[in-house]
Image (cartoon, rainbow, N blue to C red):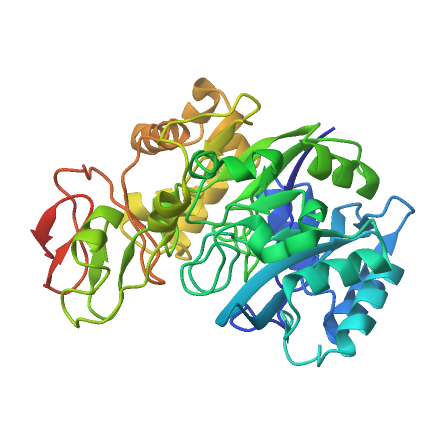
Length: 421
């Protein structure tokens, strides 16, 4: 059974999330997106966990179901902040649990280390090896996945607080890590350049803080499994029946290139190196992005593809395409009207990936159809994101002639050197 899963989301009890987040909204927009399995997000938070128990039921498959049969899997994200080798470490891990009972045991363990009620993504001073050993001691069926592994501030390979290898981070527990999450600013091709990751499955999830279709499901993982927890975990651990991923173009991610948000400076890795990783405006250290870190740790040339590499789709969410075409915001009435017109006979993933061209032609105009097909073929230009600023879709943009929206300031980019206009 084909299952498209987003296994890393958050509840309204996490910081900077939509206060309208609830189970009915998650199900409604997951179905519209084309997702068939969602992480619950934040199962360690007592109020959210109470809602999960009240609104979802376990039919013995290890998945929790809504009244209409939509599948959720118990999931949370935990932030580990500690010191190792005289350096502060900030690592986020996604945790999947096989049952409500095991999820409660995880929460009880974490409560011995601190509080779980102040944030859906709680923070603990637990080293990663201890965290993995303790959780797998609760249940060997718990799955721990390093989250968005390249982002600067809170990740396994992050430039600000991460490590240079899996072994350095997880030590003697490394063998219990079976998969990694790409994050918005990297894609599988970037991860293929690091041979250490060959033995791990590559997964993608949205880390969504809302239920809107331009956030939830913007990254996802495709499985061909029976709808139960055992089959899901077997696919994650072996790669068998994990068919591939759905990604956004990594340029879209908030940390793809190096830069300084306040200085409006964005640099390619090569230009950062020429500047000694110093901002040319304020003369302080740059926020080093994902592409730079990949270049630092890669032991293979760009373009290398492992023999067992899984395919992936690189896509911009449909709402973003429509908003760019109409020169408006993703949440505008015009975008929603066009969005519903295109999806009148299917889901967003149907439109973006699977639907034949002649079928799409009956749902929208030629310009929009052309954008969808360019998106499907990864032919759209995305101005790279940097230092917490999302990348920007530029219609008609080219590498030689980028179009920018910031205040005038001279910057360097990996595209060219130019004046903001």
